[in-house]
Length: 311
Image (cartoon, rainbow, N blue to C red; front, side, top):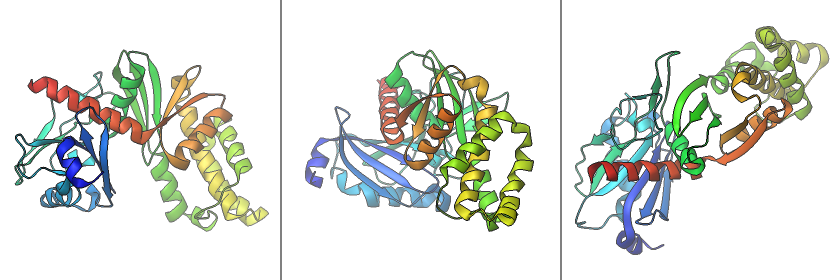
């Protein structure tokens, strides 16, 4: 859609500002996406004064020259972290994933925009936090209504979430993705793990091994190296075995949560497919959810809740 038409129909702007990237959507009054923009300007490399110029460089041409009211910009993700644009304080569970209250309002030099950041969620016992995932969970709740659900959001730090009556009741963060990166890139296993490639049999065997004997994880990890030295297994085998061991151990730890219940896997690409494969190997039931669609649905819910709050 040409920029002039976007400006005429623009009602608000949705943004997902993560550690390594930024995604923007121009939204119409009916919630339809009018235009999209993206960049690699993630929170991880920004100081607070750089956020507004980057936002305007991507979305400035969507804005009317002189809007009657500032255009709302609803942001989720790491822009609300302590090291981000402005900290959005956590909301304690149990609670709805998003709420009209508690948004962090950001002062901007450009008077055409009114920026708000969605707060993350916190849990006191056991201590845990999330930021960004709450918006995808809001999208899932909008889709499911008050149906109880178990959600898994794979990533560098995977989240396992129990939802009851439209509220996040409890959640657990598992550092599987980060541990994989550390082991594959900075441990002795790096000599036996390829940067790409897969061996599905090795992956499945490792998942089953951990489901049976999760307490052997640290011993089994070294077998990735030993196997390559003694049996000549290749780097793709090592990569798949390492992945299977770590994801299998994660599934074993979370087994009381997912046994006998469908797991809503929220994400995109190969990682969600890999988790889905592991869950099916374990006998679990999987429902694949598209991460971007839920992010947008959650931002719509956050925007609607805020508009209702100020009405």
